[in-house]
Length: 161
Image (cartoon, rainbow, N blue to C red; front, top):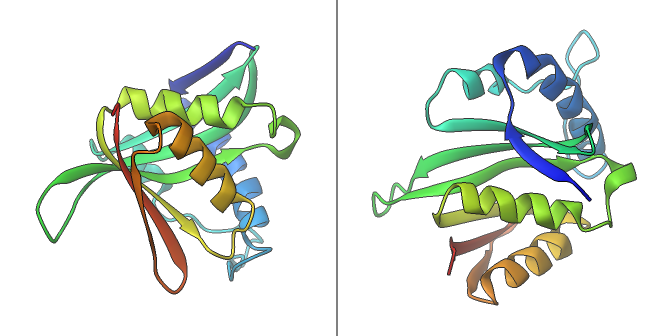
């Protein structure tokens, strides 16, 4: 295993966009994501990841093969004014799942931005919820909080602990 999590360059935006189409197509199986008139799933904030200094696009590469993406952003909590990292999007191609690469990629991303983190998971995304719980539990030695509302589970934690 030779996993590299690296920032996506501006000229790699089409690669991220293509991966996002696969991600959103999968997302559409458990939530209401509609295609636009051209048949694409819209992601209106993609270009912001190369324009906004608080957004960070990443590609995950294993042995020179792109296997996924992550879109990470720095947010300010409106309740307390504290800043925290948010895993906005995280996607591993299905053929590369269940090999430990997702957990390794997530832990690498957490390490790139030490401090408080949030990971939000739609409850309808039944595969993602156990992945994130196990991943975060392992990465934080169980030191995380978990809150659920009507449609989302939110994991919050400090990395490293």
